[in-house]
Image: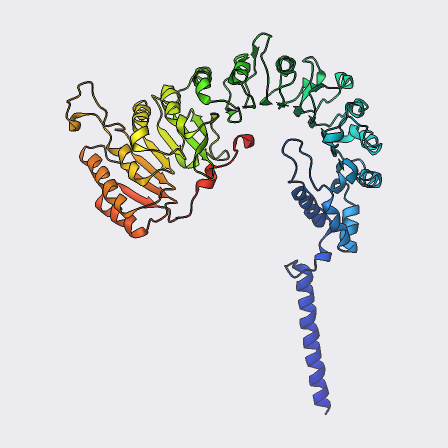
Length: 551
C-alpha cells in the first residue's frame, strides 16, 4: 500500500514539473495562441495607429477629407485593456475632423484633449449648399488649435469663418483650401500667414496674389479651377504665383485658365508637371501653356481628354508641345506607348501617348510605378478620328531613334488604317520591340510581312525593303487566338528568317483560346523563340483607368 502511495506522489511530481515547463515555454514564446488582451501596450498602440491610417484611406481625392473619420472609436469598446491603451496614445487622436452637423462639440473637445500636445491633422468640411452661412462655433474651437496643425484641409468653409482663422502654424506641411461656389479671393488674413514648414499647397477656386507669403516654401503646388467664371483674373494670379515659388518641384494645374495678359513665366526645373484641362476651347488649354517656359521636367502629364472639342483642332498644338519638351531635354525619344480607352460599346473614347527618353521595356509601360513616362498626353478621340491622329500627330513626332513601341486598345483595321500604320512605322527605322494589344489576330502578320513601296511602282515585291527590318521582339497581348492564325504567323516568321531579319522572341500574354501545344509547335518549327504566360484571362484592366493623377 505504501509503495502505491509513493508511486502516485512521484507521478504527481512528474506531472507538476511537466506543467511548470509548459507554463514557462508559454510565457517565453508569444505565439499565435497568446490571448489578444495580453499584447504589450506598445505593440497594441502601433497596431491601432496602422488601423486608424487604413480607416482614413476613403478620403475625397480633391479635398482629402475622410468620409468616416471616427469609425476607429469602436476599438475602445473591445475590452478594458484596449480602451486603456487607446486613451494613453495621444497620436491616436491627432485627426480632428468636422463634417457639418454630424460632428458634435463634445466629440471635438474630447479628441483635442486626448491628443494632448501632438501635431494635428485637421479636416473641416461645410455644406456646399450653405457655403454663405455661418458655421457652428465648434469650428472656432478647432481654429484655436490650428497652431498645432500639421495638415489643414478646409472645404466649403464660408469666407467669414475662414477670415477668423489665424494662419500661423510652424509645423504645417500640407494646406488644402477648396470652395464649391464661385471663385473668390483668399481672405486678407492669409497675407500675413506664417507656414515656414509648408510643403504642399492645394488651392481650389481661390485666387491669391503672387506676393502672398504662402508661396515661399511649398515644393508641391496645385491650382484647381473647374469653372469658367473670372478666368482671366485666375490665370494672371496663378502665373504671378508661379514666379515666386523658388522651391517648387511638383506642379499640378487642373481646370479652366483663360487668356493670359502677362509676360512669359519661366518655371524652375520641376520633377513633375501635371496639367488637366477642362475647357470648351482648346486654345485656352494650350494657350495658357504657351505662356510658360517649360523646364526639362523629369515627368509631365498633359491631360486634355475632358476638354469638350474635336482634337483635330489642336493637333498642331499637340505636336508643338512635344517638340518643346524634346528640345528642352536635348534627348531623342527612345520608347513610345499609345493606348486607348474603350467604352462599353467598344468605341474608342480617349487615347494616351507616353513618351520615354530612354529605352523602356514595353511590359512595364502604362504602369506609373514601374515606368513613369517622361511625357504623357491624354486626348479625347473617337474611332473616326484615329486615322487623322496617327497621320497628323504620331507620324509627325521625332521618332527616328525609337527602339520600343507599344500600341494597345486602338482597333486596327487592315483596310482603313494600314497606310497610317505603315507611315508611322517608317518613322522608326531602329525599332527593336513591338508590343501589340487588343487587336485582331488576323491583322498581326501584316506588321511582319509589309514591305515599303518604292518610287517605281513596278518594283518587284521581293526587292522592296522591309517595313521594320530591325524588329527582334514581338509581344502579343489580349488577343483572341484562332487556330488558323498559327499558319499565317509561322509563314510570316519563316519569311523573315529566310531574309536574314528573323525575330528572336515572340511572347503571348493573356491570349484567350491559346494552348500550350500550339505554343510548343510554333517554337519547334521556327528559329524564333515562342513563349506564352499561360494566362487566358484578360490583362486589359491594367491599361484602363485614370493613371495620371498617381504620377
